[in-house]
Image 1 (cartoon, rainbow, N blue to C red):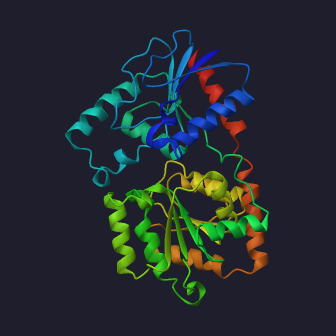
Image 2 (tube, helix red, strand yellow):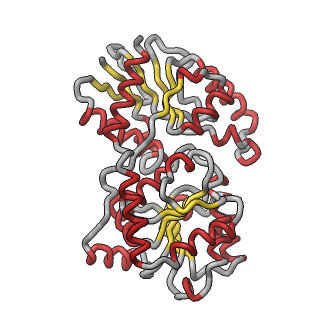
Image 3 (spheres, one colour):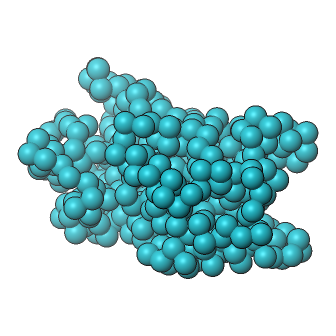
Length: 352
């Protein structure tokens, strides 16, 4: 079987996180664990290789024309989520976006199979695109192998100095979109500015390049709320962090907080678990499927997020160690070997 894979997500704005990471890790895993097949790589500037038996588009955007209307060979598309379609009031698409969504929806309906990251996203695809249950395969993602506990204390000390972090801090990793609920996280942190987080050093570390993009309306709102809550000395925005450094930050952080209202998957949760970092997460959408031993909270209520963070801050060393071990054990079921195996099974089904 010869599989053509669109590598367009490996360039442009998706390179370092999200669909870029998915595409890179998937190709590496397929070549490592499913080497009996041939993988042909192409991008949007070229046509798919004519000798391919099937085509895989590992990226779908409802408002950009990422798919051909038709294909001469069986075609698989990975749809990570449809959050902008589920919550249109928070993701205005305009006239052009509406037209492109109709075209993308039509294109998606004509493909052989759909891969998606969670049961939650599968239900959304069935509801909003009208694709039948049996044509959609849920294939869970996995953290990159780089995510594991960093045991070298001098490395952790150097990272704290590099990013100007205190000994005790909580962390968020990701984007600034509405569904990420950063404002709710900030309001939760404002409730925790007590003796537990009273150091002049930053108490909340925000990781993600969008936090440093002042042209984004979401970033402007986040900055406004930081000022409003007088959290200027409690919050540090470090921007993009390379995977190797991020593994160290997960290792040394008190906890990761994933306060999202809605997710298609929630990969930072698994990355944190893999590094032995406790997690506080919203108990909703796809997160409910993957957060396992995390402290589950209601994302709609900042006071509940604060309560979840407080529960970890107040744990004894022994209790924290137990929680860390639970996370490390939980995440062992999510591997790129398994993801590659299940993806190939989808390829094979598309040829039947």
